[in-house]
Image: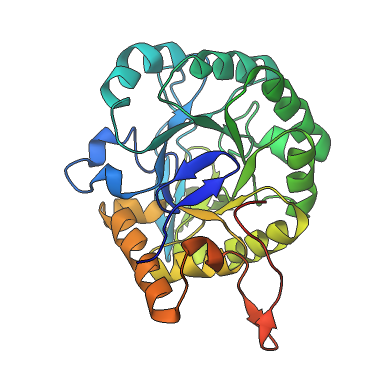
Length: 315
């Protein structure tokens, strides 16, 4: 039997598969399709201090091997989450993390403080990488100083696991990752969506109301894989990989490149049960290739007949 448990600097997952924020609702929408106790965790829908309507329609568009979205963090605010959503999901037998975003540093801090009081939420994913909002979001994640300002402020008040979600829309993602580590992040998750656009040639108009939006799906996997590999070599905190994962082989590749765990995003829309299938597939891969523990996959990429670097989940 393969040991599937993964430890992300104090956050213990029964297996390395999590679901990405914005693609899995609050988890309850998927209970008819997947046993949540069979996956490592869920990252619930992006939450802000106050109610947000999001961007005008249209805000989703299909692309070759992917999709564009410009939802803009539509949600009813953290108070609504605490009063109306949390009571319904707190009994899920898996880790529940809340994706936290804001328009300014104070918003992030207040939201994190409020979520910290919820016993069954062991961590948050700090979203400094959303490309679809005019204030906050990616603005904090495109420079080391911006990342430091919000992460340090949240770290000062938030004592549970602090995961920071990084944007790929930068020149060197490792610099942002190192800034996150130095500012107190317990882990980093990457990548968020790539900035893209789509045009309707018949109408000569953009397909999104915001013109540009976030590109996700299998088409971004090579970029995501490269960035996870670079980041895992640059920091000592755990890296959670995502971006175009659609099957167990994809997930294994991210772990070989240095990820300690993974998140499944866009493919949840295609196959709502894909997360549990991927968890089973990773375990099967480990059995076939003689890995006693799934954590042994992390950083086990072989170049010239030897692992290119060694990373363990105890880092």
